Amino acid sequence: MPVTTSAIGKSYPPTTYAVGREKIKEYASAVGEANPVHLDPEAAKAAGYADVVAPPMFAVVYKSPAVIPALFDPEVGINFAMMVHGGQEFVWSAPVVAGDEITTTTTVKDISERGGMGFYVFETTSVNQRGETVCVGEWTNIVRGV
Image 1 (cartoon, helix red, strand yellow):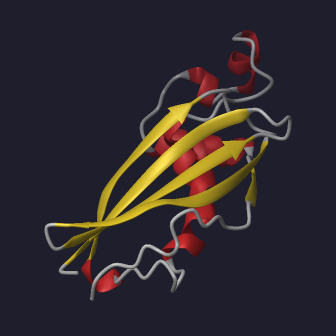
Image 2: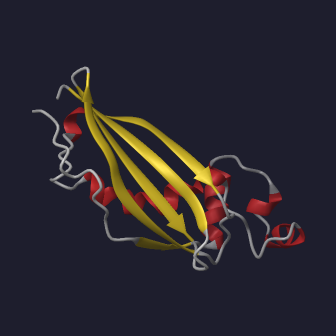
C-alpha cells in the first residue's frame, strides 16, 4: 500500500512528564552513568544544579509518551508488522533536573516513499515549566514493502 502524506504537519496534544529524582537515578544506573550529578543531590547542587541532572538520553523517557499517539494514528498509516527503527536525533538545550515538568509536543515532519519503503519522520519539542526548550528530537521509522 503506498504511503499517504495527508498527515504531514499534523500536531498532537502535548504530554507532560514530572521528572522525579528516583527516575533519574534509576535511568542513570541502568545505562551505567556514574557521574555524581546524576545520582547525588548534594553533588548536583555543588555543581550548580537545583537537583540531580537527567542524563541526555533520558529525553526518550519524557518524549516517548508524546510520540506514541502519532505512531498509532490511522491517518499516518504505519504498518507495524513491517516497521523498523530508523533513528533518533536530539538537540539538547537547558538541562533537565529532578522537579522539572517537561511538556512535549509531536508533529509529523515528513512522510515519504523511497525504494519501496515508507519513511515516517516525527519532530518532538520539549519545554520545561519555565518555557525553556530542553530538547528537540527527530524520530524516524521505516516501513518496508510499501
